[in-house]
Image (cartoon, rainbow, N blue to C red; front, top):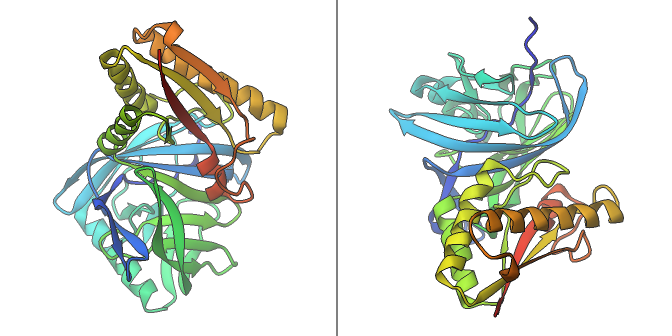
Length: 334
């Protein structure tokens, strides 16, 4: 049997030190690895190992363990690539590996001598920092063979619902592709890729932090926005990662019986106005249905979709589109 293989963005969960810790004259944030945290990435024009186009999908990744200098994380891809698995990276590979797992099927993606591009090796990172041509391969037909630093950039990333910037090394492949790597020896993570396919990390969430902030926003009243409620690509199907957020909202509503809640769905502009208006309404309705299933009276909930009619960022970029895909909760008294 031929095992189906696809591009997987193998990203480890991160946390922001002391909430969001700024560095570089307070202009950028610093991140560190931490168990239980979630990293979300979007792939555009993804391909398989045969070079065939798969399409657009989302990569949802959760760090499981850090021990002995190595790490282990889980990954899950949304439709049209419903694949899930784990990878473990040893301390030796964290230090020295020049190879990164990029394409995988279901199950365990662990390979001795390989790391994940969520955390390139110390040796690779330090070589790139010097500007040297650095050996670097991934396990696909489009492996770059080497990388070389050509500049530095600050990239925006949504961390615990705050938009911050991470300083990166901008590195280039021999055929002109570009990768952006977090400029931190403690966690040199690939944040963005532009080759035959495109990838960008759109959010990094500590569920306990984001859930607490969301509930505090509901308690203050008015409107509260979250990007931690996730759906399958171009779908109203809630992902498993959304459940802890929605469970926290249901718990709050049970504790505050005098509060009504409007659920607003917002999308990016990919797919046209009517498609996104319908999609946003279905997504808002899916959130409402989940809360009703958790015991919240339907009379306390309304759902409304806005499509891409109320953007908060530029839809011309993947980063902007990720900010526009959101759920907004608006509270009022009964």
